[in-house]
Amino acid sequence: MATTNPSGKSLSNSIISRKHAVAKTKELLLRGPQQGENVLVQPTPTVHPERLIPELVDAHNLLIVFIAPTDTQLKRMKRRCRALNLSTREISSPYSRCPSYNGQHGDAVEEQVEAALEQGVPLGRLHKTRDLPCCPNCPFTSWKRPEFTEQVVLANPRHAYISSLLEERVVFTCALRGDAYITEIENPPHAVDSYLDTNTEFTGYHDFIRNRDSDRAPSIWDYADGAIDPSTDDEEFGYAIDKDGHHLAPLALFGLVRSQELPNGWETSHHRYNSKWATPTLTYNAVGGRNPFEVAGLDYQRHRVVREPGETPEDDTLYVLKVPDYSKAKSVVAFDVAPTPWMWRTYYGVNFDHQRVYSDAETAEFLRDEMGVEVVQTATSRKPYGSKNVTPGRDASIAIWATAEFGKRPLVVSTKNALGRYRSKQPALLKDDAKDGIQYGRGESVITDDAPLIIVNGSPRPKTKEFQLWGALAGKSVRNQNQSFGQTGDEIRSQFSESRVGKWATRFDSRNATVVLNTTATPEWLRNTRLVWLRNTQLVTQASPTNILSGNASGQREVARYLRDKNGSRAKMTDIQTGADVSENTARRARNLFTEQGWVAKHATEGREPDEYSWVA
Image (cartoon, rainbow, N blue to C red; front, side, top):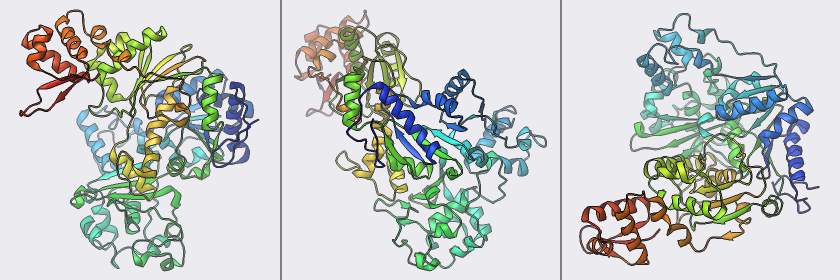
């Protein structure tokens, strides 16, 4: 039987079988609760931990919290648990109890509340200081934290701030969403000026940024003796906060006083042990050789502050990472088919032991030989499907080819942006050519088709700001150089791109699936599984005009045939009109459609506008 070591590499004596893969996944999921460890499990693709967890809870009489970012995932887990007669509780936010918050008092009141919340003013303080129409007897103010007695509690990531929820329970989680524990503060003067004016010797954020290395900065001993408390709890789940300004202002300013600047201009409170802080007066020696986070009563692993400087202080953006105290849990067990371990450790503030069932080579062998997965590659690039990079026409023609080649309609997986472009530019793709469209960010449903046909179109790509933010949380400067973001940046991209592609390319559990990869952004184990390379791309693309254009678009079809038959040679609009024997309006409409679909490229000439075109699909 296979074993794994702490580095996350599985040893070479693994048994390659589905029975063994399921058994080993269960063993690793149980390692946390049985040994009191925090474990990041990398299961074998097509073996889904969320389907195994209820069985483990029942067999081993566990008390657990299952954390997932979407209601769909939580409801699905609830159904699985109830099928085994496990007692469950699904937590709802106490905010939803407030009529002003949930819109019962009209849009204007709801917008007023939302605006205050965006500024970091907790709902509890709004009920104390604002004349809300739900007061004085709002159900929100009478909400009390429940006692958790059920075997399974279903929660979203923010519910973990309820410390009593975690105590003596095992946390199972598949969530890695920055918007749960990372708070973005725009226009810092608006958010923190009142706190600075009230609690420090600074006059607002402008003064603080210019002079934070002066003797007016709060001493570390002000935190040690409790004069300033940066660890104020999150109010959403019943904590009372009476600080002025944004409720994270104390923690944000604590981090900014102890931040260091990265080569890309961002600042971070990330600190490597045994090195000095950027500000000379704040070395360890200044606080008796102790970590300032420890002196302030903060857990360094759970608190980070990042600053993105703007042209003016109003244009700055602050990011505050404040992770719930997962150390209160019996153990934390996370799972992902292709994780970036340091990102999971940062997000949960615990030192996960990364364990995987199979190595990359063994996973590829498992998919190929045990599960009979056939992988077809149709792309030569990552194809990040953001903005206007989507090629609806080519993607539709791949779906048509795949249906003809494999005898069934495919399931198409792509980005939210791409699915929207398909609906507007190529509606037949999702209505007729494919069986369904699945978004990368969709809940963790498992594809239940027997021997499914899946097309993965393009890859998700984080925004540049996300690269820089996660890099700053790790104390690294991330920049895009020659399609690489450096080691740290490429690891960030892998978590948000390759990992999601790998997950949705294998969200089935039946044998003999076919996966068509219209992207090269895939985990190593999926690249190694490849059996077929679709080298003759014209097999995919040349059918697109005749198969996709509507029946009454004969003129456009003639334009497509004319350009396609020129084998990449360029043609001017007058040549197209004459060669296809169509009117000027038809030629122009066809040109606009084909360039939009990505079938035809425009080429600049000596004139002011591009006026030559070639078939490139």
